[in-house]
Image 1 (cartoon, one colour):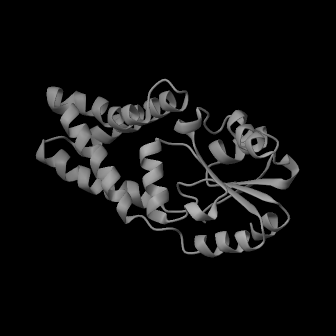
Image 2 (cartoon, rainbow, N blue to C red):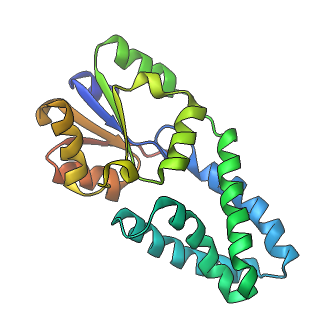
Length: 212
């Protein structure tokens, strides 16, 4: 990764699971949600089977600008809950959303992140942040990680109207700053959203695989 970055002038970073451990955030949220599910007599396995289905469905609606980030963050919980608790599903869904947002206060950057960003800044390599997600949650994460100062600009899909993996979102960043594609690298953890998207836009890419 360092070798690839060293020969580029610009780097477009992903946020979730690239700069910090998003899976830990999801796990912490799930633990708190489980306590509430038990209190309402909802079987966890049955709930999460439905949640996986609806979360994917509403995330795609969000990425295609058919619903707002706030609607996505509630509906991904409300729809599966509606199978178990009827009229109370909205109230519980709101509590799940708040749990997720509160747990953002506990996220930490991966150990090497600040050193890498500082070195890139020192070498006059321009860094950009490009993340899919609701503006409210992504801004909270950026503030908590205290990384805003390392980036020349920050782009959140909900704020700009484009999302990964479309080539349009990468071209938007490229065009906004007049970057040369041959001098620009995309760094992210997702083959679908970061790597395939970056390649469709004609950019070099590096996959961050922390599962190895």
